[in-house]
Amino acid sequence: MENYKKEFIEFMVESDVLKFGEFTLKSGRKSPFFMNAGNYVTGSQLMRLGEFYARAIHERFGEDFDILFGPAYKGIPLAVAASIAFARLYGKEIRYCSNRKEVKDHGDAGILLGSRIKDGDRIVIIEDVTTSGKSIEETFPILKAQGDVRILGLMVSLNRMEKGLDGKVSALAEIKEKYGIEAGAIVTMEEVVEHLYNRPCQGKVVIDEEIKGALDRYYEAYGC
Image (cartoon, rainbow, N blue to C red; front, side):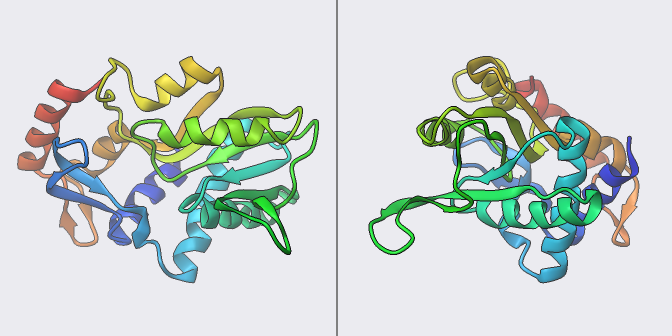
């Protein structure tokens, strides 16, 4: 596993973004882990988060694209932070863009904020985590309505590696099948378990035998 992935896993725990215990998800499933990207709240956290995204995007998509698109609302700071990090790490100017939930009819009017999108633009979508693919379903028509653009793929922070409510494959796999784009993550839950199992992080073991057993049972039921 690459060092930046190990660092990111520990960063999620340090930032209280990735937690282990017992949580009830929106789907009703009882999960032994929970991720809340809303806990990235400081400047230094966003700076580091942007760097992790930039490294993963560069590894997956290279530099041959034009725009990082962050769906509103959580995708907005991600696109901004990652585009700044891309310029700093790779000397490449990537434009950022996002959508508004409500179309603005005055001033800087329209559904987009940030860079305009034009014919020929190559776009990478950036999100925190995808469990159902609903946001991509909403995002695709917005991007395609801007012109003759090419959507290269999607990058999220964590691949939960579990099947959707109605499917047999993960949300990222469904997106790849449905839209024909690459869908990747900075890390997978498999990598998280590999790195944290019986290993101290922030002075304590966060995946001990009990949590590991709960994870194994969860993935026996919902894994893919």
